[in-house]
Image (cartoon, rainbow, N blue to C red; front, side, top):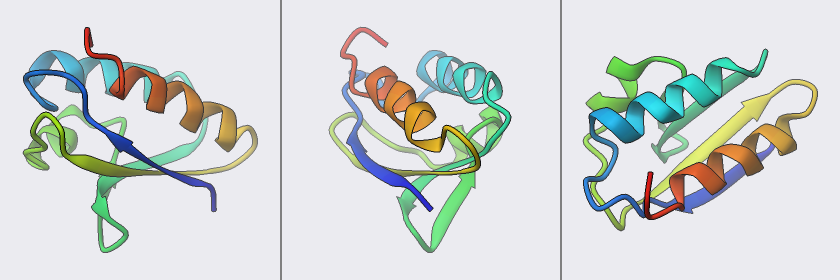
Length: 87
């Protein structure tokens, strides 16, 4: 299963706006996409409540995983979004 580690660039971490943008981007793909601090604690990246429950702060590293066709492309898109300081 493809995965990527990403450092959260948003000054507010994964709070409401960045979490909303992430979940919207995740829902565009017909894949199972998960996010978390490590392999043992991953949540559904298309659920804003699940993403916000992680409490990820700016500068923290998260793990993204995806299952399905074009998983690498989806992970690259989401990693770009999360590493964008303006998100």
